[in-house]
Amino acid sequence: IHEGILYIASRWRQAIIKVEAETGKELGQIPFPKPGPLAVHGDTLYAASQGGVKAMDLKKQGTWRHVIAPKVGLEIKGLACGPMGKLYISDWKTQTVRVFTPDGRADGEYGKPGGAYMGVFEPERMVKPYGLTVFADRLWVTQETKTPKRIVVWDLKPKRVALEIFGNPPYGGPGAGFDPEEKTRWIGQEALW
Image (cartoon, rainbow, N blue to C red; front, side, top):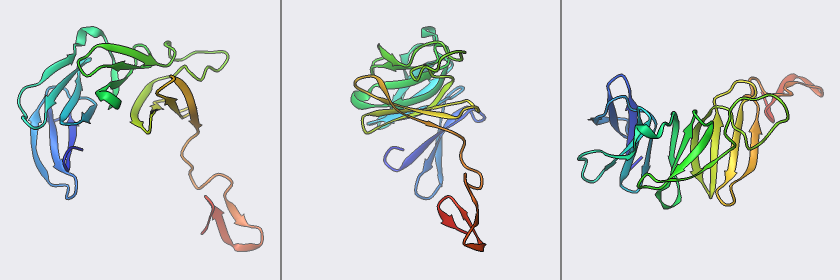
């Protein structure tokens, strides 16, 4: 969201759709071939496409400029902006989150490359890192796995795993059941039903 406008990537339209966040009214679109994940930092909109990232000044809404060229060889699944305009990219080629400066220079990565593995569990090793965001000096990364579902939270400095959240969203609530003291009540997710 930038100044009350939500930007949505639409591969079907081959465009980025502009929507008024408060009302949901469509305000137009910006032509863009094969758009992928989007992120906004300041007045700049970043858009992933075909293994690269382009940027556009939202105040001017003019031309796109390459920030990260497709030749870098990323398989981009998620994109977020963080402090100092750094770009955080979930990359399925390395199975890490790659970090780039606003002008496209590589600036490190989070996670141990490699992806799926057998053996001793390694918290630093992600499998299919996907959606991500930077919030309160931490990088939050979801994994596109079914078993187990996992969210990895990294401290930005030092680059270490600060928290892991495992498990499927509850269906009916774990430990749910009839109240042993009152058989007409159902208890689930710390609530009476």
